[in-house]
Length: 214
Image 1 (cartoon, rainbow, N blue to C red):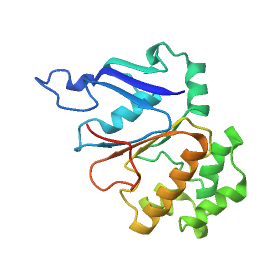
Image 2 (image 1 turned 120 degrees about the horizontal axis):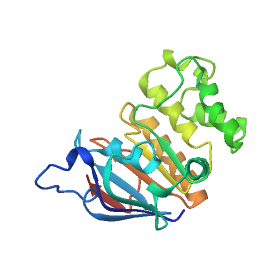
Image 3 (image 1 turned 180 degrees about the horizontal axis):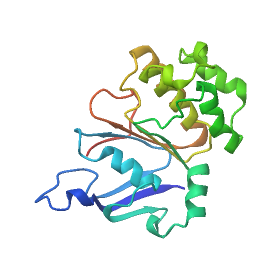
Image 4 (image 1 turned 45 degrees about the vertical axis):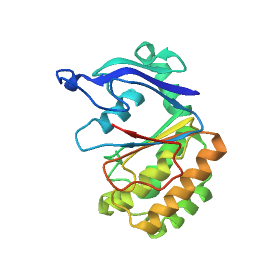
């Protein structure tokens, strides 16, 4: 997948508004593989909705979203499975971890589906992000910031053309945010992937190709 394009896309809940001032909504926007984007937004302007639309979890929007020119509304269930397995990685704002599973089990659950990472690589990331001692701890006992790091590592356990990160550093201290940015940049560069980050304030520090207002 080389391009995700939004053509006059708009959440249905916003349809009754007299005007929408946005670089994303009700515009034509092409997100290109290999480039990085920061989408800055106020709370309630639809940043998490955007991630869910592109990932195929929701379709309550107007307009058109395409993958390499193909309207995603026409994708079949097998098409979506393939896209999520090989082209689209995501770190949701609400993380969507399994609370009863350990940090490592949550990551391995994804990696067992893809076989994309070696265990030693996963353990190295857990150590780099300061949670090596939480490997066998159920994530329900971890802080939200620690859980963010687990979900981030899980998102890397697949090949991807684009990776979406919805407020990935909202609960991280600066040193861990810097480490996350380094890992993210290295992995995206290896795959020539596009990075899309959303933020309502503090954001992960990358050399963004474009900053957009939602």
